[in-house]
Length: 272
Image (cartoon, rainbow, N blue to C red; front, side, top):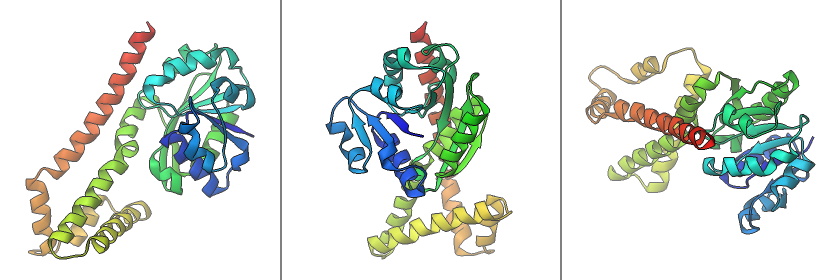
């Protein structure tokens, strides 16, 4: 089955890269659209077919990934709506855009799925939650699971959780990169070469994450395992607590989630 991408930016590129890595579908069976050839350059280099026509994506593919920026979704849906039939499955990757909003811009009975992947999907280590619209069939769920499980962890969930998912795992890689960069800066300050400090920091986060995922201990227990009484790590944890490390991460997730809810509210009001 062929796949079409409405949009050829970083989100589409990530999903395409992950599909190719997992050998889930060949590049020749994927097509992406963008307004100009310049926007298609990167995805074209992956071997994906390209077009400047959104309608062509819909007429030539049954599975459509909506991978445009949230503020462009409304116009794109209006453009493709006349070509959408009950044979299409549309998977939206846009943050802050509800299933209800998408369904309201498409013919009655459109099969709509909303998914929230993240950038590690491009290397098969992603995290994705998806939620289904009212007309989605069981075979649509099976196909969606197949696609996103090839990119990493995948689960179905209620749409009320999607904005929080976006704030934790969708935006989460950015928080992790800041943590890696900051750890590396600390290493450089204390005498490590930059290249070594970055590799040590990145591998440390990777290994720590695997211990959480593969073990049966809560993160706080794993943290306690590293903190010897009167040792160096507990002093470091004390500094993190003084700086509000936990508070900052919690508030970052809250801010991202509220922003996503705000985007959906604005879009729904514009529809009315």
